[in-house]
Length: 599
Image (tube, rainbow, N blue to C red; front, side, top):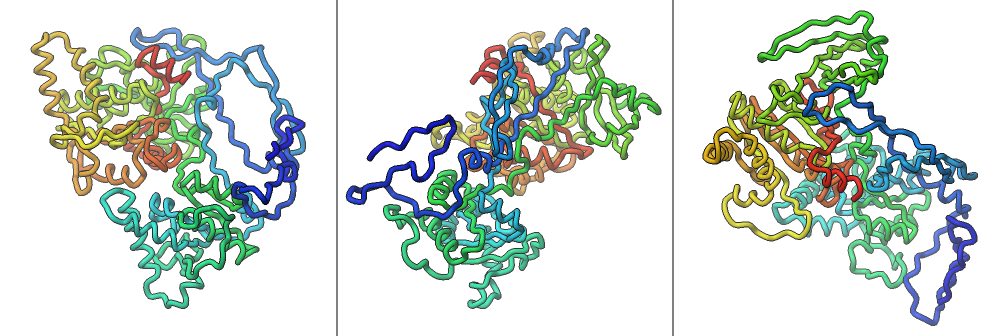
């Protein structure tokens, strides 16, 4: 078989006629059925696809001149380099290219981070532009991932192939999350089909029948077998994915003016559908955010002229709570409209003046009450021997040591101190102030590589290998106590171990925790439903911490936008008894910091 022609220009797409035809006398690869589409130029085809958003550049303020000895200085500000090159960028109109300057020495976060895009098919985009309703053919993995996905397509119709129902039946047995979701979908379908005449099923069942008013479309089942082969020869007919693709092709033939779109969480399924000329999309409705860079960070930098613009009728006073004196400022101005309750604000002047760190306590229109923070970077305010090494760690300790804050989420890459700060705050409030009577630690047991199989022993012994991070941090916290000698450290370690309980997620349903300090580690591997199950276990006097790094997700079908940790960060922001901080700087070691940047 001869090779195709070489493109004459860079980034030129080969046209259909440039590809050689397969010889009929020789066994050829599977060919897709031709689809009538208008020909586009190479640039127009590239421009037809949505362009990924560039990550926003973050500016870092210079370090203040005077800082505590234990506070590590923030990174130097980014300085534009005179070394600039120009790279061609496709215009949105698709008519040409324009040149855009690129800084050679600027950081390139997109180089090491996979860009997450919610790309719609061209058929779906055309239906959105014309205002026509679509019909979504659901793959089985969509229903097993989100049992309520049937009611998430607004005014559009939903179609379930017979093979989807067969696969649901195959996965309904067991106690896993997938089996529970399959059984829930089956019960939902049974409620929808109930009290419907047999002849009316072919005309569609209203999805709003069970009270879901947002679902204005109808549910269709595959009521008859497709007539004749609708897929290219050579594809295995008995495979479930190929039968679903055949149903999509058959629906396109039966309803030529209707937008038929396949929805699947399986990447290979979507690729196969696109190769056959069928519209296919990912399931987007479980995504909290389309871009993880838009996730709430809990911290905002005030402009340099903040006090000049907003301090005209400012009021200030002091209050003493729990032996700690704090200053409050009531400020009015347009900047307050963009703030949230319990959000941290900071101002680090460039002229060497003392920095200002505060937290928004109240909001009323353009008026906000800002409270100054306790300086945990000073050794006199250490928490179980731990002091804050940077600005974000100081913010986090203010949340962890605040008894009025019931729910705290900490995000950050490896080495930012999430586990160490949470454990130090828990030990200080359990053993010193007696605010809580026990520390409960749990995490999802998702291995990074191959599973090592069943583990012997009790529940805590089985969870032991998963809690190596807490053992490492306990060793660090125990070494800080050098006054009692080796025997004293051993006694302290036994006391600490008696107040820390390791629990598994599998046995959380139905429990109620009273006066507990609950730490949920690796929360990025939890689904929104699982994290809801955990957070609703909180009883009176319980504080819950969710720690994680959304860049390290090991659970299949979960992304940065659909993770349970992202879900709770977005839903709890602005609540007066919750707080969130994104830890930006690694404090583990220079080797770990360099590895996180270059690997």
